[in-house]
Amino acid sequence: MELFSPEFWSALLSIIIIDLVLAGDNAIVIGLAARNLPKEIQTKVIIWGTVGAIVIRAVATLAVVWLLKIPGLLLVGGILLIWISYKLLTEEKGHDVKAAQNFWAAIRTIVIADALMGLDNVLAVAGAAHGDFLLVIIGLLISIPIVVWGSTLILKWVDRFPVIITIGAGVLAYTATKMIVDEQFLKGFFDANPVIKWGFVAVVVIGVLLLGKRKKNRVNHHQEAV
Image (tube, rainbow, N blue to C red; front, side, top):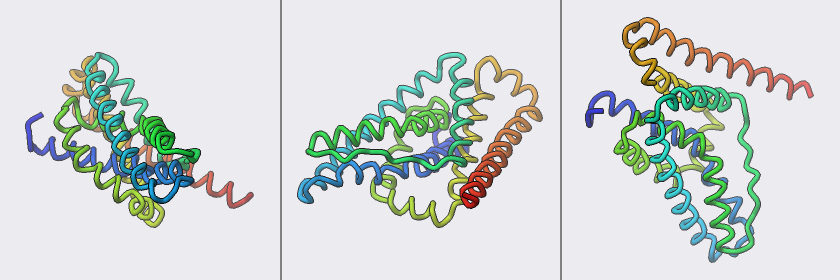
């Protein structure tokens, strides 16, 4: 991918949106893990726990970017990402993170919880990067400070403006379709049939948004009835 081309900026914007939508739980994870510690060491735990989580996530993302070069894995990753984008619209995220009782236990809890909760983020960012390691690094450098220091604000925005989740799910679904149509043994077919290619993209993105919204509405009606 050519540096600073329209495709580059489009992919970078997708990575930032994905990070903000999927990684907005960072502050909650950190807060829950450190809540029982003395005030004087909570700041240190937050800083070092965040650093550890960032390092793990960056390494995992770069590893997945490399793995997605293996034939067939783009297709598998794309299908998984379609499911993740649907789940983003239909499920409430849980934050079952136990409070740690000492400095190192809190850091370990933060790193492990973030790694487990960040699997969807890793796959989505790696897919949006289209195999470009530089894009991953730039995306992380831009989005991590926003996520770490602004995640509480992001969560408030999501509660106030639910359309943010819808936009994020749409970006995820679009990223998933790009992974699928770029799969090596499918690329020739889709490139030769642009109508089918963009029709497939439109059907998947619109389908995810409509089905996700419908499922969410059904769940909400059921909860109100109960």
